[in-house]
Amino acid sequence: MPTDRAHERNRTTVADPAWVAPAFLVVLPIVGAALGWGLTLIAEWITGLSWFPFQGLFELFTDLSATVQLVVALALGLVVGLLLAMWAVHEMLTVTVGPARLELKRGDYRCTVERTDAAAVFVEDKRLIVLGHRRQELAHVPFDLDRDKLADALHRHGYAWLPDGDPYAADFHRWVPGAEGLPKGANAVLKAREQALEKSKQDDLRELRDELADLGVVVHDKDKKQYWRLSDPA
Image (cartoon, rainbow, N blue to C red; front, side, top):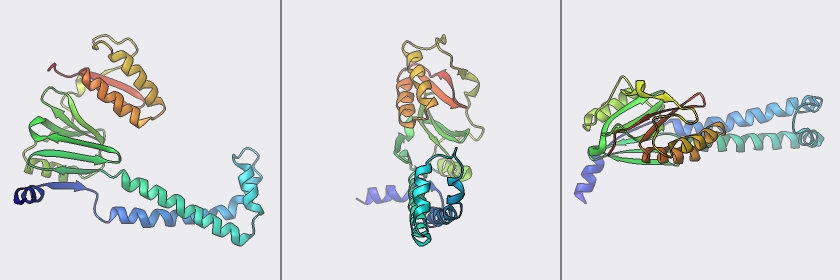
């Protein structure tokens, strides 16, 4: 047990300041309520716009008394704001750096990388990436935290931090159907991933990224386009 407590003390957590989550949970519902109040002022005007969607709902809304309109609009705005705030808090990134492993948590994404497996860590295009010793990516997650704090934590625990970003950026090629140089099956996975990318299906994108990693392919996305390179063979 003392060893476990010592391990916990030796870990460094890099995350948003403690006040950010409460601020989201307070400010966004207030903003939502304010927008709801604003809706009561323009609802009747919207019903005069034949092209505007949900005309039936707006007509029902304007049939209510002014008091009921205000209550409904404020309540709806509060709920929408609260849901948005809860989503924002859920999606906040937490990076826990310890002497034995690196742990990443963002939304439903969880990843643990043993320090002995991590060759380097860097941030590129607002993505935190952990490289393995075969140039493969062991972790890949959107990053919006303080880079200096992350670098300090990594240095403190003996991880290699690359301040200049991806050392293999020049090795990436834009993917086109039937691209040569890819291992068998990779083009089919990239084709499926292209469709997921167009529809912004994040779960499918992560799953297909893992499939490509198993094939020895590293993939990055930019402006709805895929770029790939190979990792070193096992």
